[in-house]
Each structure stands twice: as C-alpha cells, then as structure tokens.
Amino acid sequence: MSVGGGQGGSSLSDEEWERFLRESVDGVRGAPEEPSARAREVTRRLRENPARPEPWRTYSPARPKSRKGWYVAGLLASVALLVVALLPGRVTGLFGDGGGGGGGGAGQPLAGESERPTQPPPTESALRPTPKDPFRGSPAARWASGTAGISLPAARATGWMTTAQVRQALARTRDFHAASNLDPGVLRGERPRRAIALINPRQQDTREFLAAAFRAPDEENDPLMLFSRFDTERVRLIGDDVRTRGRITYREGPLGALRVTADVTYVYAVAPARGGDEVARTIVRRETVLNWDNPAKVHTEPGTFSLVSYTVDVANGGCGAAAEAATGTGRGAGTGTGDGAGLLAPEFGSGQSAGAGTGPAVDPYDRSTSMPERMRTGAGGDGCGTATRT
Image (tube, rainbow, N blue to C red; front, side, top):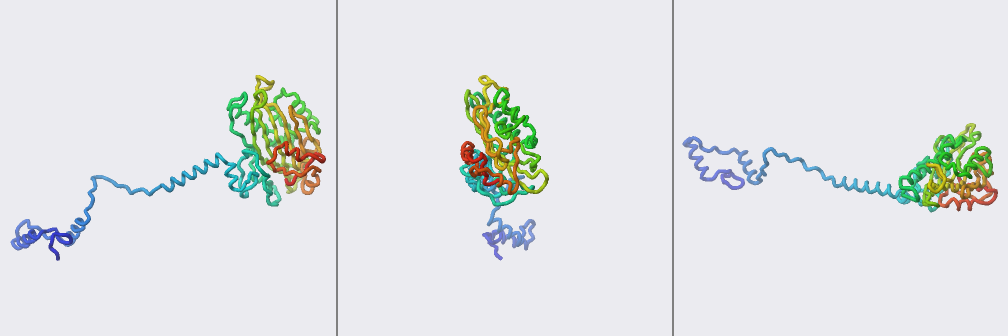
C-alpha cells in the first residue's frame, strides 16, 4: 500500500506515519489512528473533485425546458388568424376560389363576398338534390344561410350621416332584405308588413305601387319585384334554410343622402306541395337601390328610406308575369318572375326545361356581371331567359 501523501495515497505524511508506529508500540494516548481504506478513497475523490459549497438553506430548482418552440408556433398561428380576418377573400383565393365564388375544396364554406367576382362559380358535380341535402350539386352548397351571406361594408361618415348613423342605416337595409326575402311567413305568401314599414310612406309612387301589387297583382304591379313569395298551392319550402350571397355598398347621393345598393342572390329549395321527394331550386337575384334621405331636405319619416330602383332576375320561378315595372326614380325589370298572380311557381323535373323561355341562356349563379348587364344579356324573346342550371 502507498503511504505517500500525494494523489492516490493516504493523507498522512511520512513523519506522522513514523510517529504513529512508534506511539502505537508505546501505547501513547491520543495517537492518531490509521484511516480505513474507504476513508482514504473518499479523501482521494474529494481532493481530485472538490465540491462547490452550497449556501445554507438554499434550493436550486431543475432548469425548465425551453419553450422557444411553443412561442414561435403561437406567434405564427396568431399571424395566420390575423391575415384570415383582414383578407378573407385573398386567403380563399389561394385555395382555388378563383374569384368565382364556387371553387376550393368541396364542403368548405366560402368567405363573404367583399367585391364582385371575376368569373362564374365552376360547375359542380351532377348530384341530384335530396330533401336532406337540397343544395347538393349547386354552388349554393357552400354559400352561407340567411343574412350571414349578405356582406356589410365598414361604416364611415357619409353625406348628412355620422358613422354611427351610417352603420345603423346599413343594418336596417339588410333588415329590409331579410324581411322581404327570408321571412318564413312572407315566403309562404303573407304580406311583408315589416319590410313595408321601412319604406318612406311619403313616397307617393311607391305607395301606389305597393297598394296595387297586393290588391290586384299584374305585369305592371307585381309584388315579386320586391318580395319573394311562393305559391303554396303548388310547392312547399324545404325548411327555412335559404342560401344567400351578395353584398351591400354605399356612397353619397343627391342632396347629401346616403345611397345604398344591395346586390344579393337568394337560393330557395322547394318540393311539390302534395308530397314527393323531388327537389327543385329557385334562384332569385335582386339589386335594390335606395336613399336614406336627409329629413331637413326631403319629406321622409324617421327610420325609413326612399326606393330609387329595384331589379330582379329569377330562375325557375315561372314565366309570363311582370316583365318590368316603374319605380320611384329609376326602372326595375324582371325576367321569368312568376305566373301573373304575384307568386313564384317553380317547375319540377322535365317541367323546368319545358317552361324555359326563348331568351338567351343565363347562369343564375353568375355574379361576375352587374345586374344592368345581366338584364341586357337576358333581354329578348318573350322576356324569359333560359337558366343553364338551378
């Protein structure tokens, strides 16, 4: 065994070791004892790796794992959500919408229409609609329901109205279209009282038109020019789900009025009134222009608007009724709007093609053209165009 005091040996010097041997023989009291092999090993390790002293009553917790990856992922997700919220149309376009409003993956709902699309929605697969899935096989399968499909712009002070007043006027304009084209009672032929209550009662020509349209509807005074109403003797609506797509815009009009234009397409699913599983669709596109007039310059009632013009185009709603009707300060026109009784009367099966007019073919889902252009394209023949699809 090594008796040196260096690394690998005992901690006793040579002099101390000799004294230990001598005093052990003499039995001197208090002579140092030889350390055990275990003690010498511990001593050697401490000399080679001295421990760092730890303060009294201190605690060193385990170092947490790095969360840098989670922070980066969360930041990227937040940026992505912000882009979708600010530019929904652009994001949708990245996935194949193409501006037509019908592209992208099947079943994925479209973002709201913020501007006029550049092309019609693509042709869907030839799938027949069913009572449980009445919009199957049409672009409307991806459209929103009810007022969710009618986009409102951001409000700003315009004309005589403050920002808050413009916001309220836009909301009431959408309320008018909901009461005219989405209300279940109105769709089943009831008088659209809530919608009429929003129209300026001091507008004489409009008041006369409404009175005649509901008293004795004819080609010049047809309630279908403003309201969607079905002939419940012939058809029944499949639930209350009406698919919509469109937008509302505004600008300053004459005398500082807020001029609001609503261009909306409505798709209704119907079935024969006396039973049966056959499903048909009626597509109604409306453009309504109205003024929220300054009461200091125009005779109007608070909370009401004046109609400027209204235009309607209908696919599979019957043909031969109102071809056009006069409005307050413009012209309204309708192609294939009804059967002369102020009610929409869709056809089923072969009757849809048999009831087509002699006018040019029109895609009722195409929103890439304005309504004035649509009416010019669909003019001709007996006033009823031929829908390329429903």
